[in-house]
Image (cartoon, rainbow, N blue to C red; front, side, top):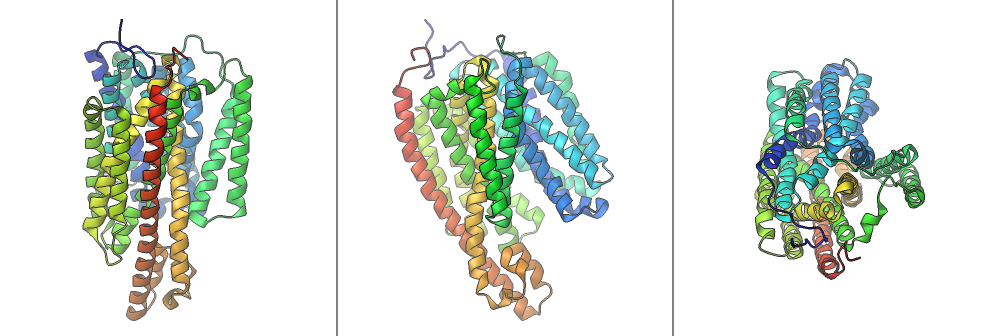
Length: 513
């Protein structure tokens, strides 16, 4: 008999060469989706000068993409189970290419917002489709773990090269070029996908429940929007109402799933302790990593004093660490138990955050870069192994639903991290600046370090110097505190993972339960 995996699934032989070639095709949209998250920030000054959006329109141009991705992930993952993962991937790729072209040639802010919304919906098809295809293409544990490592490395590569590619494009072309670069790559995917990627779907899937789809979309969007508002403006009644409404609708959604004969999300997946624990650890990992990615670029530019391009270059070591870690994890996990690697990785990540508690208000570039590299090396195994456990614990016909839940936990964890830890850091900043005489006459200086630097340009050299130094001290203090909280949080997560994952692995398998 064939050996069984910890989830109870049989372990077939190694994946054929065709699957590995197909994995290269799958990596293409992953790189682009990640790049699209980063290149727009570089293009904002250029498109603002051309299109002249209002402040509210500019916020929607930047935010609508992430909102639509987060809200549509569960719908798209479940849809892939029903109509086929390859078909959904190709449909998403076609719309992603068309929306990219529409965004590139937008002539007013409304057109750009609409194009970005379609881009977000299309992007929401790509991540769960590619991850669920990996689940079906690589059935044995070792090959699947390697494939997931490559999949995560693709996102990391996109995030790492996004600022560099975007900077080069903006150096020689107009702002729309950062969107237009997506089109030829999506054409390649549309040509090679039908040739190299197999089709999979749930043969017993029923009709898509439209009510559940709407409920999940509105629930996730409400929570994400409320958390983002907290991060940007601090806690208020509007943000609280959005979050509470989203959570309440989420409860209604879950109750509906229990009544449906063919549920939108298979709640039976949560009966696997390994699945539930891995999903929770994955959410915790993104909670801490997104928050620090929010602070490090600002620290490099506004405290260390680097230009945006140089700051982007100094974030490359962290990106390279993510890519290297994603590719090395499968080899390490093949020699050691996955939960032991996971726990050690959480401790390494905590060490990286401990280094970041030592950043200096005078500007310590080496400390920021070294700390970022260490926590990147630590968190990469966390993301790779938890994703592998989540997807591996699901039966093949529910791979799309499991992949969507994994991706949704990424989005919610990251948004929650920025909202909670960002709010703590901003509270430290505002408290310090409230007693600073140089900031007394400027509300923007008391709100953000960027506002303080801008306000300093209107002051005398002596006043400007005092204001900037005070803002740098306050910002660094907030960053140090959030890094310290992250150390404690990751160590607690490691302790809980050690207790719960060990118990989950020693429990009954899926087939025995």
